[in-house]
Length: 185
Image (cartoon, rainbow, N blue to C red; front, side, top):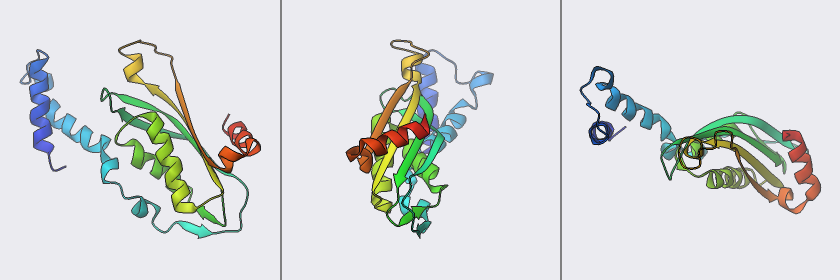
């Protein structure tokens, strides 16, 4: 990370501002750990979707729904810079092209490892797959637990946010949408 030392300085200042001693034994290495953590949390900004897909799109006479469910994700809420995490379910109807299954979770990671809101994240995954594969349709459902809602504000520890993006046949056809939703249930 280019600004590794700057993030360390900012973290040290933050510790001082909240009344901590950054030279206390348990905090001496905290600025370096925080900089390293943010380097990981923000990998998505450097992600190149074409590089992730890496020619793993294959011609295939397949017309049945493909679903990858329970993809674990984490992200950082752009409003509070506090984590949210959960599961993502992705389905698509091929149009003579399929994608390597491992590429779907990698695409989810590319967008989740940025400052985000779950609503945008859900749409970005769906629109990216639509653009890459030109399928008959894409459906994405994300279920997330937001620490900004659980730890502060309303403090609802058992709350779960669900977002969806339905494109193509998943939006047009209630039957297609129902099939997808029953598979991920």
